[in-house]
Image 1: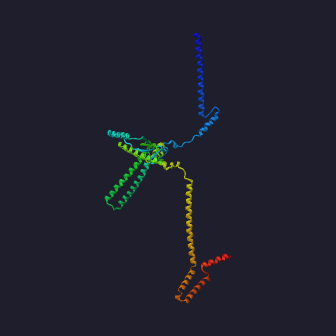
Image 2: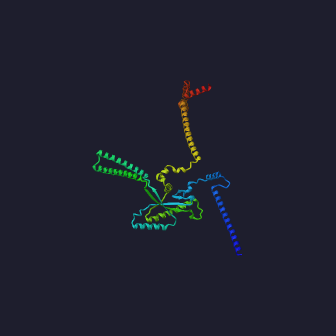
Length: 409
C-alpha cells in the first residue's frame, strides 16, 4: 500500500512539472511575439509588408515632420518697455546690472560690511531672483576709433596754435612775456597730442590680446501674471502692471545692494537686446558686435515687404502730383499767351482806337468848339482813316484780308 501511494504521488508530481514547463514555454512564446510586434510598429512595418514598403513608409513619415520656428526654442518673445516678455505674456523679466567691487583688496572691516549688506539683501528678498554672470571679450575697436577722432582734433588745434605762434614771432608786435605765454600753451598742446597718440598705440597693442575678458553681473527679476489671480485685465493692462511691479522690485534690489557698496541700474531695451545677443551668439559677438550687426541690417532679414496696395498708392500720389504740376504750368502758359494776344490785338488796333476816342472827345466838346468845327474835325479824322486804308490799312486789316483770300481760294 505505501508503495502504491508513493507511485501515485510521483505520477501527480510529474504531471504538475510537465504542465509548469508547458506554461513557461507558452509565456516565453507570447513574450517574444509581443516584442516583435512592438519592434515592427516602431519601424513602421507589419507582418504583411515587404522591406521596401516598410522603408517607403518610414521615409514618408520622416517627410511629414514640421519645421518649427526658432522662436519656439527661445525663452522670450520680444523686448519692450525695458522688459523681456515671455511667450504669450506669461512671464516678464527686468534686469539690473550691478557694478562689481574688488573684494580681495578690501580690509577686514570693509569685507564684514559688504557681507552684512549682502545678508541684508538676501533677507529683504520677497520674490525669486536670478544672479547671472556674463563674460565678454573686450572689444576695443570702438574705443580706438573714438581716440583717433579726438587725437585728430587735438593735432589740428596744435597745428593752428603752432602757426599762430610763428606769426606772433615774425610780426614783432608782441612782448616777450606774451611770446613766452604762447609758447607755454603750445608746449601743453604738443604734450597733449603726443599723449593721445601714445594712448592709441597702447590700446591697439592691448586689442591684439584676445584673452582680455570682462565680467558683467546681473540680477534678473521675474514677474508672472498668475500672481494677479483671477482678473479681467487685457494684455496691455497686464503689461503695465508688470512694468510697475518689476520697476518697484528692481528699485528695492538696487537700494539693498547699495548697502554692500554695489551700484546697480535697470537695463534699457537696447541694453537688454545686447545682453541677449551676447548670450545667444557667444562666438560671433567677439568678431561681429551688435552695433555692426544692426548697421549691416541683420534685423531686416526678418522684416516683411511693404504692402503692394500701399506701394501702388504712393505711385499714384506721385503721378497725380506730377500731372497736376504739368497742368498748372500749361494753364499759366495759356493765360500768358492770351494776354499777349490781347496786347498784340490792342497794338494792331491802336490807330483805330485813337481815332474813335478822338471823335468821342470832339463830340463831347462840340458845344465849346462849335458844331461846324467839330464836324470838320471829325471829317478830317475819317479822311485820315480812309487814307490809311488805301495805303494798305492796319496790320489787323491786312491779316483779315489775307484770311478772306485764303478762305475764298
